[in-house]
Amino acid sequence: MHNKMTLSKLLNIKHPIIMAPMFLVSNVKMLVEASKSGITGCVPALNYRTIEEFEKALKELKDKCVGPFGVNLIVNKSNILYKKQLKACCDYKVDYIITSLGSPEETIQMAKKAGVLVFCDVVNLEYAKKVEGLGADALIAVNKEAGGHFGPMSYQELIPLLTKNCSIPVISAGGVGNKEELDNMLALGAAGASIGSIFIATTESDVSQDYKEACVNYGAKDITVTNKLSGTNCTIINTSYVQEVGTQQNGLERFLSKHKRFKKWFKAFSFYKGMKKMEKAAFGATYKTLWCAGPSIEHVKAIRPVAEIVKTLVNG
Image (tube, rainbow, N blue to C red):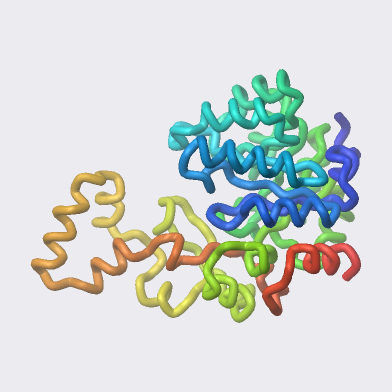
């Protein structure tokens, strides 16, 4: 497959856009609307707690999507459901899998047999060459504007680097919130773009009203980085709550998050000390109170249907 191949051709969709997989945000309704709008949506398998719930979602997506849809798989050991999720993706013949955090080797081998495409998250050339060698169908080039987990390079640096040195299509992830930014990525040689943050504040999304309103009311300058959620750096909206609890795990939190059984002792200790605030900061910071988003929320001015957002991305 040559890297001049556009995402539209690769997936047979009208516009070269993936509605990016967002942890705890993406859902069936959003993917169905994306497919009706001539783009494709991707959902993290981990948005479903059990394999039964995941399979139910895949069945519904198969029934309702009028175009291709994808699944994002965490392919390292931290994901204990990985093997079952991969099997389900192959059984239901999803159109493509986006792999994150780990070696995609086994995923690529299994998916190839099932006729499923595999796109791999990459942040540098070394890893891009590695997954290309393993047989990946495309690269998801995660740049430093990406929401959630981001890469170290700017898209201006990363896209040309990968298109020049790899022969498979390069899909840019991060930093697209309007038509002009999408056109920039394509002009640099990207086959398409994976766009997430501007789809959080949609009528079809099931996140809280507060989270949606935060995407409307805050902008690029309000994006900060925390390691409290997953231990790895992740972009979030810098709300007053975030300012209160801080963005870095302290030594005790780091120790405790590694040693789950100390949690209850730590709680007792906190009460004993009367350190209510410390406890709230350590145990209160969750995906419900810390809201992941990228700088492209700058372009979010209202809560709108997925279809309307796609229209503005395509027509300006």
